Image 1 (tube, rainbow, N blue to C red):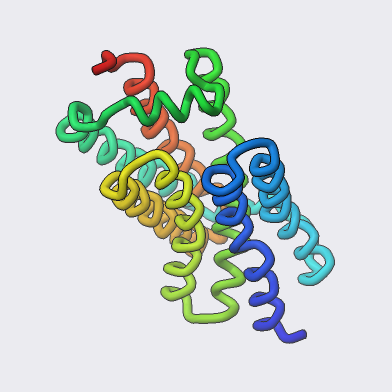
Image 2 (image 1 turned 180 degrees about the horizontal axis):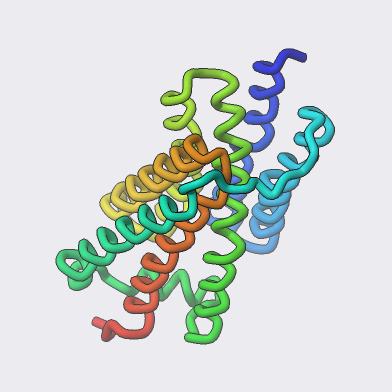
Length: 230
């Protein structure tokens, strides 16, 4: 099989998985079956790249060491995005966002107490962000790059990363918030893909990604536990 066909096959296996899982869990099978499908799709997304690297690419596993400047770039980019997110929220959005939908999500998913929310935060920042960088920025992007030029590959990888976020956001929010949130996710995905392309490592993007998640989760904390119920 040619490199292009291998890349296409890899994308056909992994790219739809998060969206299928999100659709099952949040739209058409909200219950145990949907959660099971969601978990299975996560396994496909995160295990396939490991198998593919050894069985198809014939490459050893790697810790993706950073090139010079990658850490500073990741921190700087993350802090800039954090400042932008928090500035927009405090200046324009805080009083405009109804916290009720987020509180519904928190109650449905079991993180409506401060302790449970902090545990979810730890998972998102230290585990989920890293897994997403590994899956979307390394595996998905490099397969896209094998099929097309670098800029279209970056755009496609960011779109694949955004797709399942759109589904999850739409399950709870109206389209105005969905579009705003999805634009933010797409922009983040594009910037973190650029980090991978520039430094050939997932760690630069991960540092930025983790910092941005902290800012978003701080907004979640404010909406869940600080804002007074309307």
